[in-house]
Image 1 (cartoon, rainbow, N blue to C red):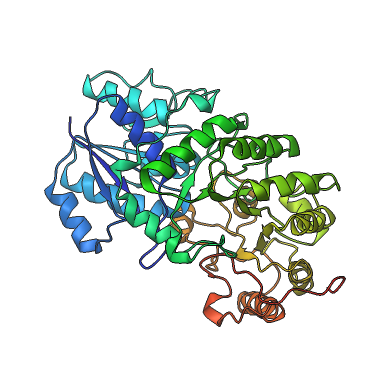
Image 2 (cartoon, one colour; image 1 turned 45 degrees about the vertical axis):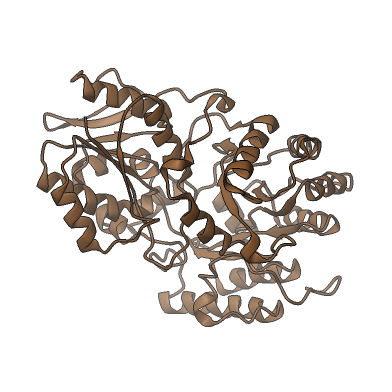
Length: 470
C-alpha cells in the first residue's frame, strides 16, 4: 500500500517554518507499525503551486494523509481536490483541528474521504490496517467518513491516559536542520546569553489539552482531561535532542505547560538535578504565581534554564474578559509579571482585539496595561474558529453568513477578517495600529507600521518603565 503524507505550509515564504509536532507523532506511529510512506513537506521545501499540483497529478498513492489547523482549510480543499480529480480511487485522510472541528464540512466540501477526530496516534494506525486489509471502517473509533453518499461518525476514541507512554517522535523523517536553522533565527526576545547564530532551537510537547474553556480558543483535545508529562519524560526527550541534534534551546509548544506552582517547581528541581545545561521557554496560566513565596519558584525556573514564560492578558477590560470566559483578571496578570521580573524572567503575552463590546477605550486600556508591565504583546483580531462559543455567536448573529466562504478566507489572526464590534472596519484597524504604535514608542522598539501586528516574534523593550509609571 503506497502512502503519501503531506505537511501543509500554512504561510508563504519567508514565514517562519515550525516543526510539525502533531504530525511527527502521527508519522512516528505509522512508522512503528511497519508502514512505509513518502513525505511531501511543503513547509520545509517550498514549491510553487504549479510544482505541487504537477507532483500530485503524476504520483499515484493508495492513501494520502494531511492535516492542519482550521485556518488551513483552503489548503486541505485545494490539495485533496487535486488528488481526487486525478486518482478517484485514492483514499484521502485529514486530521488535526480542521478535521476535529468541522468533519462534515471537510467530507462534503473537499476531496477528503475520512476525517480523524481528536488524538490521532492510535487511530491512524488502526485505520491504515483496515485500508490495507480491505476491512470495514465501522469499528475504527475516532473517525468520521463518507460511505455510499452518507456521512457516518464513529464513537470518539478514548485519549491515551498517560502521555509518558507515547514514544518520542522520530524527527529524522523531516529535514530537521532546515527547521532548526529557521526557528533559531526567529526566537522571541530576549535571547539566552548566546549569539543568535549559536542558538539551536527545537520545539517539544510536554502536555496535551487545557483545563480552561476560553470562548475564542479551539482545543483539539476538547472534552478530554488535561494531561502532562512527568519531568523525567520531558528531560529524557530534551537530552535526546541535545545529544542528537546539538539543541541548546527548547520551546515548549503546549496549550498549557505549567498549571500549578507545585508542578512548575517539580520540573525546575528535576532540571537542576539532571545537569542538562540548556535554555527553554514555556506557557503557563495567568495567575500561576501570585504570592511572595512564588518568587523562589520562579528563580528556580530561571536557574534551570528558563528564559521566558508566556501567559495571556487577552484584554484589560473586565466585561470582555467575561465574554472570553477568562478566570483571572488584570491584577493577577500584573502581579505575575512583577514576580517574574523579580526572578529576572521575561513575561510574554498576547491580546485579542475585536470582541463585540470592544471600543477605542477598551483597546487603549489593554495597551496601557501592556505598557505599564513593560510588554509588547502578540496582538491579533478575534478570529472565531469552528467549535468555539464565539463561532456559534458569529453564526447566530449573522456575522458568518456562508460558512465555507468564511473558512476559505481564514488566515493569521493578525489579518483583519471579521468585525463583530460597533466600530467601523477601517476605524477599528486604525485604532489598533495607533495603540500598538504607541506601545512600540513607549517601549522604545521602533517597530515599522507593517511589523506592529506581524512582529514575527516577541520583541523585548529597549526602555524599561519607571517604577509606578503607567
